[in-house]
Length: 229
Ligand SMILES: Nc1ncnc2c1ncn2[C@@H]1O[C@H](COP(=O)(O)OP(=O)(O)O)[C@@H](O)[C@H]1O
Ligand SMILES: [Mg+2]
Image (cartoon, rainbow, N blue to C red; front, top):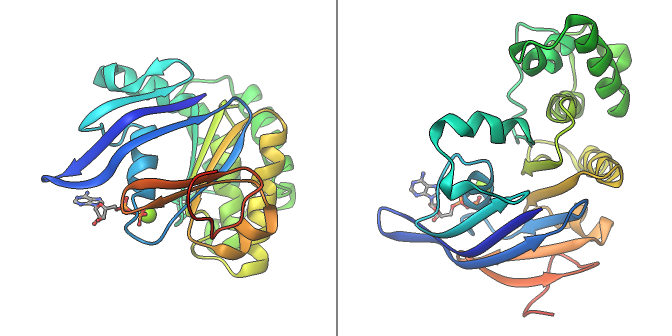
């Protein structure tokens, strides 16, 4: 579902990703780990086409992102759910309106919007907060709204860049367990994090970046895994 081939990314001549090769299959769940500056956000931004690689190929669902015209980028984004560290909710809109935003922008029939928003809020267990505003919610609840917004359009791929960066450990664990449940419904999920606790709690695939290179890629892994295999 996600494939990177010989990907290099430089910012003003300085490498941020070096010869990255990676495959994440349909419905897989994986962590992308590494210290600050390792290149996690850069890799994520290549996947949602916020950036393009200096060299190499990035593919999602068979679509080569390096060959997409600017006009085609919104089409890609509709097939991706993106979750951010700082939630990026619209502060003056209710939970329902935040989650409905993309569907309304796409011109989806309002009855269908309501049905799909209710279903997404049900997945993240926030039906009772549908009329609340973001500042009336805890950080964990705000991130659950962010996740509902990301899945409301039924994307095959969900990307989350440090989704628990602003949350306490037990809330962080709830959030990644929620993302794990979403992947069990067939969504490919990639989570970047430098949080050892959540990675070690779930024991799932762990892809480790260090200085822009993949230094380990382990199934049922822990955060600290050196060398390949
Ligand atoms: N927009 C940018 N312009 C210049 N350098 C950048 C930019 N974004 C990231 N970098 C650099 O690329 C490297 C990787 O950064 P990043 O992908 O943000 O790592 P991480 O998310 O793992 O902390 C760092 O050295 C960072 O300073
Ligand atoms: Mg980052």
